[in-house]
Every structure is written in structure tokens, then in C-alpha cells.
Length: 275
Image 1: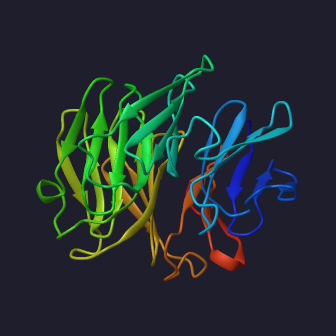
Image 2 (image 1 turned 90 degrees about the horizontal axis):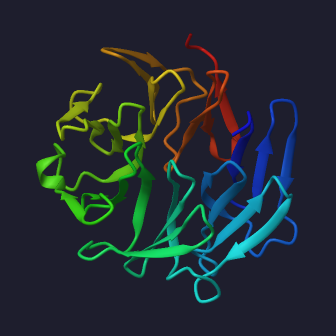
């Protein structure tokens, strides 16, 4: 947003890079462990992840330079939050462990969507596609789509080529295709409900994260390499800095076409190798 990159850290709160300098916020926060982020035009929402403070949300309004906090039992949140997503209209969706999706609408009001019959309490990742459909993925209970009225179940046994098909991250492109990073490859679903698989390892290739850049190209991250899918072509980049067996790695893309990859205690790796 505005050329700024936002990072949630394990122990040091929220960090921002504006292209020239870094800034960090950690002092005075109830929790400084941020597991995931979502960004609107005026605020950053960070989901906390510690044993004591699991599932709260830290909100930084960078337009007004003001912090606020959302905690289960102290706000409109129905329960501990595991994932947060932003819709095209600016609404913010909070997936909770109490069988409810809490939505903070752009008009400042809240609404609450029951997730029955969603079988899993803890949602791994979520997003809102260009059509306004809300998607959630669970550990091994498949992919769920909310079309504004009903939940639609996408059975993992009918999608994934391996048992369980653990999902790590999801992304959506401008054409409405859903990209799913799993332990058994990178899956794609078209708006016509056609499914495909990108498995460069031809058997077992776990993708940790997936993202779509401003040109519509898809980037996927494994423990061994960074992959670029552009139309019908794919490219593989495997510099030493990208390789890691660390779990829960993530990537993001900036407006200059650079790929930022989390590298654990080493910080982040910036990849500029692809035109």
C-alpha cells in the first residue's frame, strides 16, 4: 500500500519499509508476536500468536498514526482469530475459533457469519476474491467458499493428489483463479471450478506460499526454490539464499517487481533475478 511493505515479526511487533528506511513499532503493545497481516488503505491488522495472547488483533491506523486492539471478550470478536482478510470493498474478515466469521464493514458496522457446517475451528488462511466470495482453508478439511448466502464445500479428497493435502497459503489473481500452496504441489482453481496442479518435483513438492504480482504472474515458494508462472511458462530460481528447510516461510511482492522472502532469524531475502 503506497509503496510500503509491512512485516509481522515473531518478537518485535510491526515493521515497515517505505523504500528508503525502516520503522518498527513494539513498545506499549500487549503482544509483540504477529503471525499474519492484512492491510487496507488506512490500517494494518496483525493477528497475534502466543500461548497467552493467541488470536487477538493489533490495529495500526497509519493515516492517523494511532493503535487500537481487538481481543475476544473485549470487542466484537467472537473468539480467537486465526486469519484476517480484506475484501475489495475494504471490509475486514476475521476467522475465529468459535464457528463465526466476524466482518468489520467499510461503513464501520459489524456483521457475523456462522461457519456451520465447517468442521475445523482453526482456519489456516483466508481471502476475498474479486467477485466478493470469501474463501477459507483448513489443515485437512478442505477448502470452503462463502458466496454471500451459503457455504460451498470443496472436498480435499476430490482435489488433492495426496492424502490430507495440507494447505499452507492461498492467493487469487485478477482473473479470479484461486492458487493454493499445499504439501503436494501448487493447485489452481478457475472460476468455472476446473482444477489443475503444478508439481515441478513430479511426486512431492511442498509449496510454503504463493502470491500474485501486479502483472498477474504467480510466484510460488518451496524449500528449494522460487517458481515463477507466467501464462503457460514456468521458471525456477534457486539461489542459495532462497533454500531453507524452515517451515512457515512466506513471500510478498513489491511494486518494483521484487520478491521478499522470510528467512527466519536472518531477516528477509530480496530477490531481483526475474525480469
